[in-house]
Every structure is written in structure tokens, then in C-alpha cells.
Length: 319
Image (tube, rainbow, N blue to C red; front, top):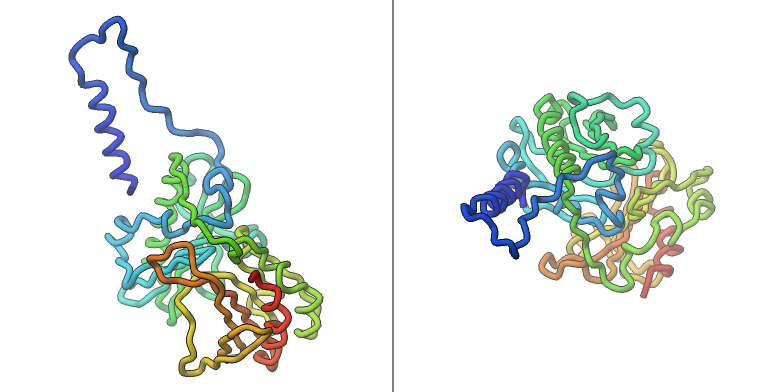
């Protein structure tokens, strides 16, 4: 339910209660007014509950989004984010909304405030670009945050229209949560990857460091669904991510192999390599998704490193 629809429904209910002309009989209890909206600083866990199971697509008001940047396809739901393709100022863009990685706190220290500080309950929006692409963060009273990123193939397309679209989306999320809207949660199956910590369940920092050839530490997001060893943009890094997606298959440039006893799909990309293995079915049978674990490596001889790490990690996946 969008904000305007929810407000209309509440208004109708109040009118029905107060529009009765008769004075209540002595044995009729007086009508009670609607509960006042919540107040006080809003922390992320109060707003979202369990961060491991949040339905991020359910936090977005697509009826409002369609007015300025209609999605070009059905939104894609993953464990820690919701993403969709749209067109902004004539250029195709990917919008992704969800948890930032843990290093976001370091970037937020030098972030730029966006808009007037008029959001309720101590919420604020700041901008912290990454590699030329605009990132906005909704910062809660406890300094944890959600982020919305807009990504273009052509970075020159990231003009003021992009910032306006992202700001509007994040403003809607902020006001909805501040008003007391409860986040929806996904019901994952037993043995789900959603219950694992990507930084510790399958790989250790020692194992990753040994294969990268330099000491790195892992930092994850609030959901625990992703972990990054190394720094974003560094020549050597490893990312582990748990997500949802279609059933994988071999295609052009994607090789099917057996790694760590599991069916795996290896893809070499410019300067890097990814290895994906599927797990059990996703939480929503209608979406026909499966859970998957992905290892992404940026390093010299990246596919060799990725295969070695997959051989260590995949046997530890739940059965």
C-alpha cells in the first residue's frame, strides 16, 4: 500500500467513526481515536527488524516510482537488495536499493548532505559517490544506513536527473518507515544461505589472504549476505555473496564445472573471475528463483584463485 493510499484509508476510517450524528447510549463505549504516529529517533533495527530477511522490494513504492522513472522490467529481488532497470534522461540505468557494505561507514564520514534536514525522527540522506556513480545513503539515528545506487554504462549520463530520482525514492522510503510502516520479511527455507554469515561461514581471512598473496580482512553488510576481502577498486580483492536468481546454466563465456563437489559456473571477466553455485529454492515459489553463492575475484590469474577458493568454500554449504 502506497503512502497516499494508506492515508486515504486512515482518513476514511476516521470519518466513519466521527460522522455518526447520534450521541452514544450510556452503555456504548466512546470511540477511540487512531493511535498517534510514532516519534523519537528511529534506529535501523527498529525500522526493519531482522536485517537478514528484509524484503527490500516491499519497501519501495513502485506506483510513485513509475511516475518519473518506470521500471523497464520486473524488479529483481535478492537477499540484501532490490534492483530494477529504468531510463533516466534518455539513458538506461540500473537502480539498486539495499544494504551497503560495512566500509560505507568510512565513506559516510566525508559524505555530503542531500536536501534540507527535514526528514522526521532523526533520519537524513547523504551522498557518497563510488567510482563516479552516485550513491545515496539513508542514515538512521544509530548511524547505520541503507543505500540506493544508480549505475550507468556511460558514467557521463549520471547527471542531476539521476540524483533527483534517487532522492525521491529514498525520501519516500524514509517517510514511510518513520510513519511506522513495518518492513515485510521473506520466509527462507531450512538450510537457507540467508542464515549464514558470508564473512565467516565458508572462508576465513587466512585462506583468502594466502591465495591473494597479501593480507586482507573481510567486512560484510548488515544482513550478513555479502563479504568483501580487500578494498573496493583494489587490484586484489575477493567478494562472497549470497543471493537469489534464476536457475544457472552454461552459456557463452560461462563454463560448467565440478568444484568442491558441487555443480559450478565459472565466468572470466575483464581482470577478474566469478564462480557461482546454486543451492535450494528461494522463499517465493512464484518467482522461480534459487539461492546461490557467488565468489568474485579480482587478481592476477583470477580464475585459478576463484576455483581454489570455491573448492574450499562449497563443501561447507548446508546440505
